[in-house]
Length: 473
Image (cartoon, one colour):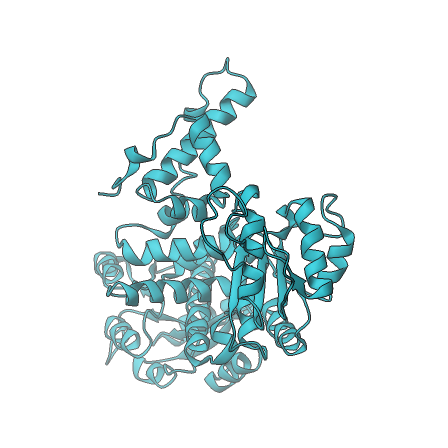
């Protein structure tokens, strides 16, 4: 028979039980207790067996990470009283009741009061093993969630900005601190929504330039006709509408950090000017002749490998690629998902003065099964919706748009593929506008589109934003 100390020590060393789970078995009948214990051990469970509820209570403390299986009818404290006391000591402890034939109604009532399940005697051993296995899985998910919450509450410094316990995120934090101290130019690679701007901000905040400006610019979101002025500024009269002098992002970021997001979308003629600015450390405003010295660090972000991007200058790539950081997609760091979700849900609840909704074990399972194509950005949006709308399940928050039936959007068989895809695309944009009450910035974030692209599609599909203003109301 295993001891509680052994089980506790094993969990502290490894973070998990080596077998399928641990079971605290309580039954006053010796033969039933011994045969059940042997069967469970053969099924690869750790077992602590007790002859009374009073004895079982001595094992129910903060170190116990298993489940409780108890007979209902016992002398002294019965199984129902033990269940009530056990769940006071360990919140939401899975409890499986062993009942006689005449106790079924009572067991069903106990399930409504929090029991995980009940097994009627004489029971099928395979059925008992199946139920215990599911209960142990639930218990381990709950323990993991509590551990993640504890980790979050005890974090400080960079851990509170770049949240996660996965090996890839721990490595990212270490590499980030090294890059921050070097002050070299950096390229950050990562999928849409993976947190590239947050990493760039941290590079700035942990660098010697932290007391100066961090200046972000999304190269893909600014019309090509305006991006040169945005970057380098302009003099009065440089072009029609230039009524006053403008300081560009390069100049504004002097002594600080310039963040060029989606740099792969930078027009070719501007890549040459950026390369010169980085080499010579000088710029010229549009319409001006004066050279202005700038001392800045450039952090660039890209969704694609710039080495093989045919429209990106290789000399600029090598100028930027002194250091690089890679952000793993959320689907590759499952252990971080519940922690991030809890963090953003708590943040939203506090900001809007709402009571924090508890993340259930089913929620954690749903998170693990979902692929998170939008990465951390999508997770944050889902967590906020989950925190602010108590009527939504997590599944509802994850599929607000994909719930649109493709067959409904493309149900006319005679349409060409292009026409069917166009119908579907229009439906997605309309549904997103409705969800965001016509807020264009929110739609851009949700669909991860440049403003120009969204405008073109709305014109193409004759979508009027005004029709969706206040749609949530």
